[in-house]
Length: 612
Image 1 (cartoon, rainbow, N blue to C red):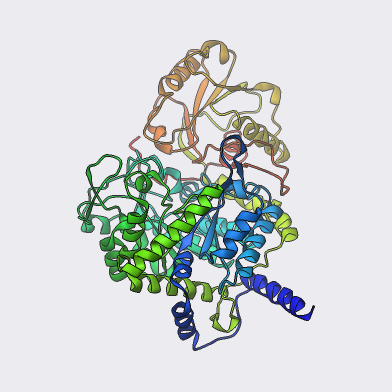
Image 2: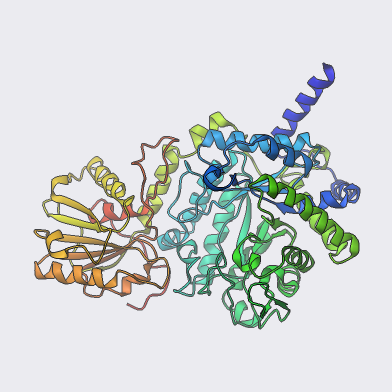
């Protein structure tokens, strides 16, 4: 009984260590970590370098998101002491549930004899890319850039950091340090602060500070820069035909400025043939392709480590993305990545089925065999595991508390009860709303707004979830003392641009607001919006275009009377009541409507260059 009680107390202390960095200094910590690494079997070293997901379980109709661990998953966490786990939206349905899931993962890990707690990571960038289903979304990086105030990057990241920390999530794969200098970029876009590299650096630094203030580790992405691609690496293998000197003049400026202040750097699955000349025969096409940055020693070790002096952990972007998975043999990609200098491998194996768990056994034993045969450098492996454990020691995540180094981070205890109070709280949403308002940008205003309360207004919008965004904005206006007659406002969802009768739809309107939401260079409703503007003018009505996502469409409608940008088109599935059960709250569109009806002035400035 005493042994069992001692074990339980030890387990509780270990879980608490996840939340509370050690207070004592151990000058022998480095030697201690090196001894830990030396004592590890090769398979355990491999597992420490892996960061898998338990995103789904099952196949076909039985495939579901994982909100609690099953016996097979617990057994896997006990068998392999992974370096960490990455969470997705399927894991984070409710704040208390997420916290309990994280605690269960940590418990299984420790029960398996792990020497360190798990790194629990997530892509909670804010704005367009958010995973916490009940979290405070924040307006997103480009909206923050539009405010012109780097302190808004700190405020947003501080809220995000609080909400992650209270749920036991200790790594945020953020901030995005990509410079969105290619308007045709299909994957970065509003995830970037700006097309100005110095602005990205300045805002990115304050974002890092905001996460660090809550003891949440940061990961710059996507090195050496994903902003000048016209291909999404989730679905293809991008190529940037620039030299190292050219990257130094733009893409690398933000990374150079803040790399030494970040805990992690995430790699990009992008080919740079003028920098990395190594090649591989694609298993998809049979053609010779250049090694992408994720697999490039020239880029990861030569540039990031040696030239830029980054001393933290290099983590790959997900290895199941098409850029890697479709072109490279899994074991070849792993070998190249580790030998190139990558320290952690993100999602190298799908663990959504029992067969997937068996594949994990084969994968780990296969990597170990490669190490023992000398194909994968044992020195690279030992260095990687040492870096990972040093990072964990810095944040108080080693089981042997005497090995944890002094940390200045003040970390919140993960608590299901506290998580329900903190995540998605009214205080956090208030900060979010204020930043969203500051971001709203007036690109053109020919006496089109603020809209007088007696005007008849028609709002045309392309996403059903945006209806609640408008309703929410109108309620906020009334609460603010601007009495809006909702009977004067018609909101029409445009499901079919070609089939919609514009003349009939806007008859009698004094003002027509038409939402435009583009996510890449492709614009599929330009003719529709142009016709709306023309028809509005025939009726002596004002036409306002609300650019709800990428702001490049603000240049497409010079005939509009008003053009406003808000940088995130995400709507609301439910009107938020500011409780922890609020889901999918996008503040940008309601903030834009609030400004158009005179609730606030449009203070934002375009954060990217647009030829108007």
